[in-house]
Length: 238
Image (cartoon, rainbow, N blue to C red):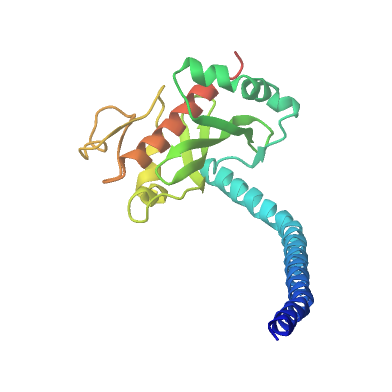
């Protein structure tokens, strides 16, 4: 009788094994299926994202170009047009300076700043009035700051305007307020300096501006960018 019981147990175990193997096989198939579904979803998402990027990048580039042109017009209102073709004959000296900007800026102790573009401001008769310089400083409080600087052939600042500014609201973002930007207009100096005591407007020196209260880093970044542009323009033609 014991032998019959043992035989029955063995038979039952043998019957369970195929069923277990079947379940394990089904589980493995399910994992593979889920992985394939996830891969297809990821692939479709990537294709759609690439398509959206392709459809919008042209528009984004247009908006950036328009913002730059608007900034150039704002910083050199006296100009009839701004010639940004760096290969144009009128921009030959600008191209040379652009190519040598690293040595020009480093020799003046300027770092973390790049001259992204340089253009000539031209009057109705085609005469060059000055330059529009697009400058990026990587050391803003909120990241990169990019501004356009207008400066005459005589070295007088005509204005500044921002194309990229992401500073703290109510603090560094005040750099885009008229009172702050207008302080740079008319300055004709080798450099601009700022004061934190509010005496810039009353200073006997015409190159002193008032900083933005509570936003020294932003003020410094903008001032350093303007000084980089002044230095750059002073080397055009050398």
